[in-house]
Length: 208
Image (cartoon, rainbow, N blue to C red; front, top):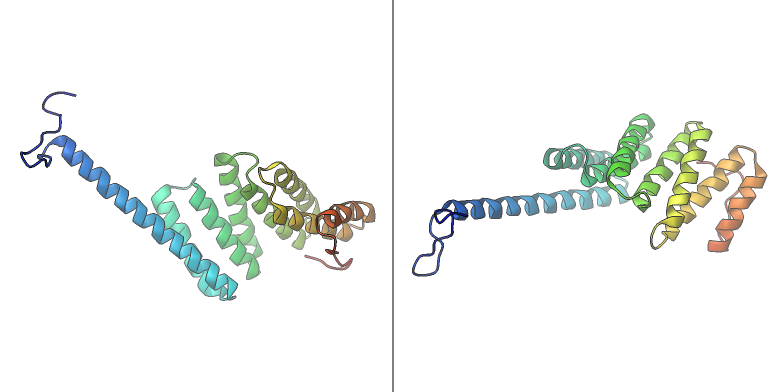
């Protein structure tokens, strides 16, 4: 750094107007903007969760779309917050039985997660599980089976082992093989389910 670029202090200890001071101030402003944007996005998603839990799906969808647009505006198209926003929107669309768009949002969320997250991240398994349920509801049982098995594998190797996620996938596998008319496979996953949750039994006629 040249003498002209070095910080110069006034007698009272404050920094004189130099290129370095200007750069410092710009960084401070950008940091503040970034923190504010992050807080706004988090608040939007908290509100989305509240509306979803209260079954106010149209309002939740509108806000989820706004959160997605904000995440894309700030971070671009391939960022963890974009993936989370897509997942949230897809969950709402699934609840509203808008399955085609829900599937597209889950697919895009999954593609981003697989690109930026570790292979054993439980968030990937969560999206796979949700996609599998959509596929099964549309009659695409082969793709549903593939996604559920991949989700189960990820949950079982992920750090800390997400038991709630494992239980959800096992339940869905029992339903899937019951629907496929394969009692042997359904029984196998029911046994695994019983080992983790002894009183959890999936009714044989329960679908997705």
